[in-house]
Length: 302
Image (cartoon, rainbow, N blue to C red):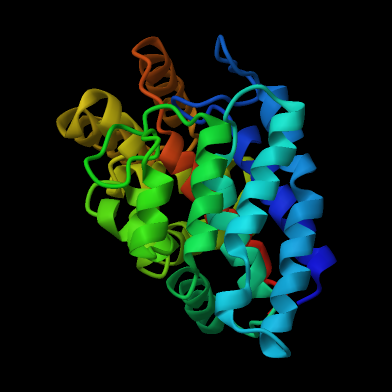
């Protein structure tokens, strides 16, 4: 697939994700946070375009002159984070970048969704310790909140980089350590099951039947209802994350029998207010929504 097209789809996906409203607990077009606003996310979605295009262009070489080990995926994740950091002062898109960069590179050499999924896995699995060091630098620049402290290879530890090099750990290795409790890490080490099996089919179906906004919101709620958000669980505990997922399911159930959508919209707004007032931010779910949207639009061109 053409790298220019891939980059446009990546930008569109990032912007559609944040534009969905009211997307409960997150920044959206009618809700700002005290430290980041809607426009920050729009800017972030636009400025990564050149880097994603470069990543996809380099990915084309995997079928020609380089191997997956030479894909330099960490380099492009770091470049995208650095570019974002030039324009906005907060971590608006680290998780999105970590998800859409391998999608973009894989799309350049894939001809269907099965190939896309396998090549994403290959990019992560055959990455190198150089990629991991770049990823850690990207996380440091983004200053990602709610990462938690880990005993092994903690991104906040000054010794971690040396430990990574000494143990020759690639991106798959370090993400696999946290995949049991972090859904983004699980996604990247298990062929993106949430994106491909939950988010993508939901968004693809709804974008044909309804508005893009409804497709985005329902995709977000569907993911949240089935996958407790790990940004919430790291900050407030697993039980609170499960409670939020249960509330998301309650909203979705209402949509099933609300013909005029009035009750659904009221419940959706109440859910958004509740999460905002209690500082419960399903940020990982937002990232997975963006990757789901991207796969949906890519699928239209296979």
